[in-house]
Image 1 (spheres, rainbow, N blue to C red):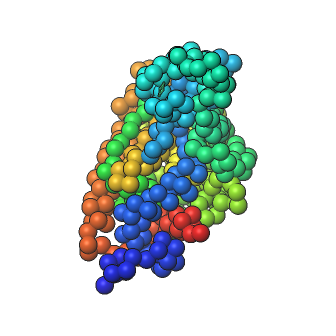
Image 2 (cartoon, rainbow, N blue to C red):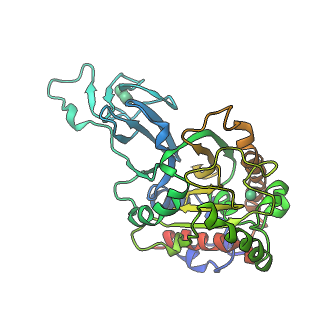
Image 3 (cartoon, rainbow, N blue to C red):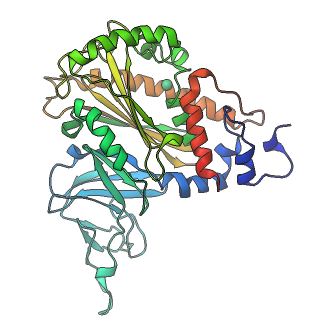
Length: 405
Ligand code: FES
Ligand SMILES: [Fe+2]
């Protein structure tokens, strides 16, 4: 009988120690509330998560709310033009302060008893409080916020991993696509009724692509075997430099992250001949990004910590952020980004732009939820990863590393 059904429940430490490398996780990693709590403490609130792009908050007073699991942050541009982030939790009795998803404001008024905070999180007014009440010590709690070449990252803790390596090494590849000057042309949230790890595990492997994503599989070569892939990769490499896209490759992801640093990685992969970008017919859906001169037939993968991934085609960038809602639910937030000066209706059409990753994400939602249902069965037991699930296997190793003492 499988260990998770054994009469005596193993400690989390023993369960982690007992996990076979290269095999999927024991059922308890998906269902045990104590493990989920440990993940909240050690993973979910300890790492940077992509929360959007700086272009979404251009003016003083612009704000948006960003939620992950039990946490909610207000990200706001203050009156001096600086970006700030605060816990969306009132210092009176803890109500959510801001109930709108985004907007523009000079102050945030708590809907419960009306305490008022400014865009620096400072408490401005609190009715009927005693004379000796100290407003200065009741500011909203700060949340860690940083901007990486235009992308906003949030961490719900005071000492998140360093972004030094990421900022330095990603500068060059992100400059190719002019990340600082992108704009979010579309954004959509997909609710997924499954444990969050299953959603990210699914994103990390393309073993399922041939079966689940006929459209994606027509253009992307990730599910090819090594030999065939090298040939198409060669075609792209011949064109890349002339198109203005330098060959860059690095991998400091998950277990390969430098100590104390947030993991990150970058690589570019060829698409099949005839596909210039990730669109229905492979034809451009937006103007070329940055200083790219022509289509090389490739797409670049950026990884950034445990929750955030980006795919940069030559004419648009798609950002994917997978975050838990609770133990049994998660969400995938997708951002479609184009050149900052591209005009909707003239330079791009939102539906054309969103088509591939909208249908692909709905298909993924289905397979992830089916996976979740089976993982909850009394017959579930870990299975061996294929050669096409290497990144997922590394991710699992990293998760186990975080849960270990
Ligand atoms: S909880 Fe916010 S004012 Fe009372
Ligand atoms: Fe998929």
